[in-house]
Length: 421
Image 1 (cartoon, rainbow, N blue to C red):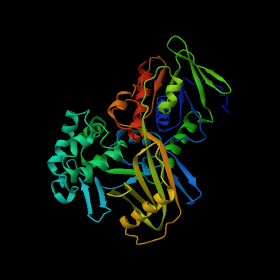
Image 2: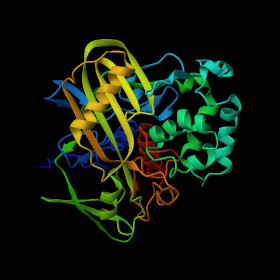
Image 3: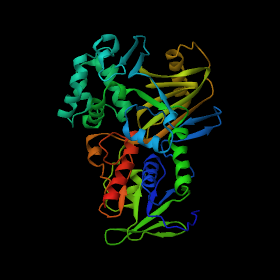
Image 4: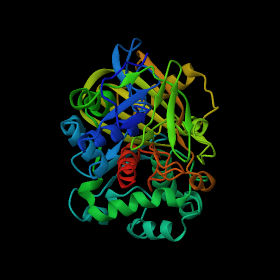
């Protein structure tokens, strides 16, 4: 049930996922009056945490990795006083294990302005030369509509050990479908700042504690609390403006000078906005969370080659496995999949042979859009044909793949566009 407010809000944000919270907190920072509506009973969207009875822990719906130099993430966390809630490596280093016994290696660019450690072969994945890395950004920018596979599979070892896992984890799209333009901008931004900014980071405790709860607290302190259970049924338009927001139990009139930001998934946005162009193909992400027999005081992030698992995050007394680019309709026999994941965890973390512990498998069926050529062309601008309606979400045209950085940046873009109008 929506609650009445004595003071009319000037900005209506529909959706309290990360994009919506980024939008709302940025508006509040600028001194605007904001009301946030969320259809579910929990904020966070795909960036959420929940208390799991099987493991007895608070777990994330999925593992999210970001970089030390992601500017929008740092602006957002600083705004909601949560910069101290991230953790990770102290250098730009990713470690890999070949599950079929081909050994371990790393990609280590150091922590300085220039990635000098990459000069040494021991700091690069097998089959990846220094020249391959140097030329990769230009190669993608010169061929933006070619797939990652067509550009880099000419060197099989480098492709298998680096480009394929990178593509699947960053774009959540198989490399034979993912277009280079989707990955190129990540390399462009890294090239501006150096190795220090490429240091991988993640939530110190969980996603909710780091990204969601501080934003909710910020809004409750500085504005109005998020209104949960507020599902928008439709938007009513008049003369190229939103004139009202229709809920099941009431209409909210949108007066002159007031603005609406839709921060919802693309399939919902298309139902609410006539003629909206939006991506319609998606890939899912499978995550497995397993209790460990001992705690890892320092976060371990390990890429898995030639296995079912793709990344293993070991933190505290839990190991989490990520499998990206899963077809949204794909189903797996959960018990068999969980056993395979656990065997690979034991191998990678050198735990020996142990019985499978308490665990939880989470399947986010539509985790991101498919970063294919056709779907990239469908990503809309944050501005719509309606003068007081704007879009936010990692699926709009941010210039970045669907990531935490992209979601937060989309909120900033919506605020900028609304302010300019």
